[in-house]
Image (cartoon, rainbow, N blue to C red; front, top):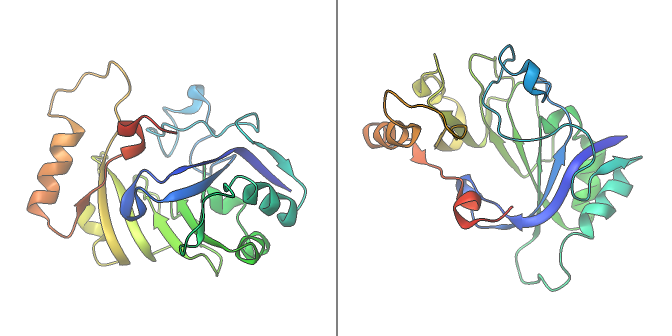
Length: 217
């Protein structure tokens, strides 16, 4: 059984694949936060800006097996979206590695999809994923220490980006923390801090949430 909050066709907004047409599948559940505001302050991740509770989102629901979910996601890819590039699906959450498994990976590959995952890295990724993006959260130990991109939300209290630079990733991105509406900033904005860090540490590249800038899902 797979529980999906929402699924939709859009453009990837962040990181090395920004601008790429993608089917997004957002699983319910996370191992670092319940998703409920009353639990945020005491959670292991306090800045998440995503609703991953329940299955009531766009094209969400519960799916009995991998074939059913894979067919559901395949239908979201427009028939008119053709060309030489492979179809692309991004599994996210919450924490997608609580549910993404070998059976679903094989089912998506059988339908011609390249598979990406956006994970907090606290769980090991199953074999067969084509693009792994790890986004560390505070001092939670990483079990997925290699992949295609490491995307760190910045700044996080007590987190030094340089502790990650020796890990086996191809791309290293810093992404400014998205402040809550009305937040009071006293020591410079996250954007200023992130730009400054990338300027002084060229291994890191700036990642922006271009989907928010463009006004798309």
